[in-house]
Length: 263
Ligand code: PXL
Image (cartoon, rainbow, N blue to C red):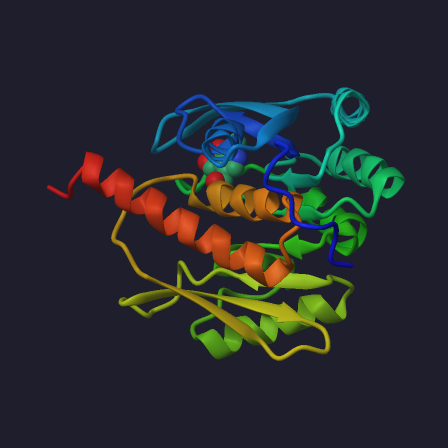
């Protein structure tokens, strides 16, 4: 399934399917910023508008599923789309609508950041959407990038207390039809390294490490999934794309810390 030949000359296009965050910390604003910094054009399908500060979700208004589909179809018609990055979806009807469009356009590689809640704890996906996401959307994705909290919800269990438990939960999801899972270690107890683990059926787990930075930057999940999608859009392999994304986020965190040093 690894795509086309690597191309560095033409600006690739990534279609971002995600919600907006008025604080600018996360969501589609972060995606566009990261893609632009990587020389990749962003086509957009907005799924929801949210009103947020850095510590609170004040309001969420999902788009109609037909408007989300229409944005995706128009973006796919307007430009040759090399990869799709999906973030917040919000409702089960939007998950259905997005899955239907994707089925028409596979094998474009799809990276799904399964956004269920904001880092401040506000809900960004309705309860009923989780089952639909697992059943309809996960099997269509080249890569799904849950953190430990999202992984536990998707695996219908409690948050892992160890890496071994997180991998067991990941393997459960793989068995239920997901092709590849990047289990992000942001919530792991390791204080020195941030380790993300790639799980694929028939492959040994692969570890991607970076020094852990004590940063408060929001939107790191958006940034990672967008960077991976950008690399896939340039024709890199899945492993190369994850390694690239991990490095990009490490550098973003270092830049954010340099601008706002810890008090
Ligand atoms: O980082 C996850 C995320 C994704 N999309 C939107 C968000 C957030 C977190 O706050 O607000 C719109």
